[in-house]
Image (cartoon, rainbow, N blue to C red; front, side, top):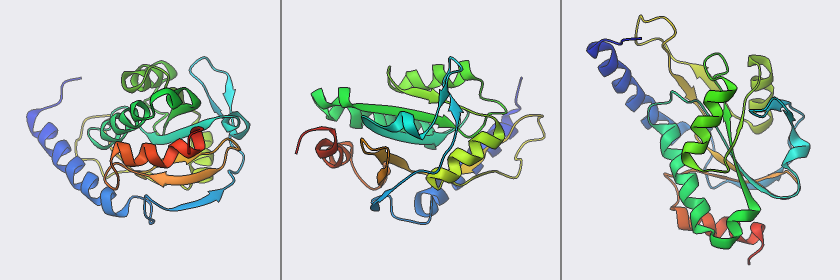
Length: 200
């Protein structure tokens, strides 16, 4: 679909405003907050259709980010940052599994989410669910998301406000850290993850 130049400019302006707001009010807590949290039950699906739930988060370290593939700035920034964190881990990278969960199942098909995720890291796991399943999974992590007021009259065009946090899970599948690019460098994040991944 063709979007007019005015609509594009309005969309970008709105995205910048939302992006700036997320960076100070992303989830009501510091991205550096710690404290082990057990996840409530949820069910999502991998790109091949197989189910994925909290039990699948056990046995290795996971980095989990919720977003959507048409996010104009924040999601690419955070996922690119996550990929840099992974590279900073060196050999320990093999012990860490990055995950992208879409909050926009209306537009994000399994194929689209999988292609998007692997643009940032070849091993990034893409997950999606029905709108109801997505809400349950988001609630389990404490993620908040909502559609913005439309900035274009074009059918199907919308942006989403959402929590700006990468969740770090330990080998027991518990959330132990909440991190974000605007509060730490990739090396600082990697230093936080290394003890979990096997190196003090």
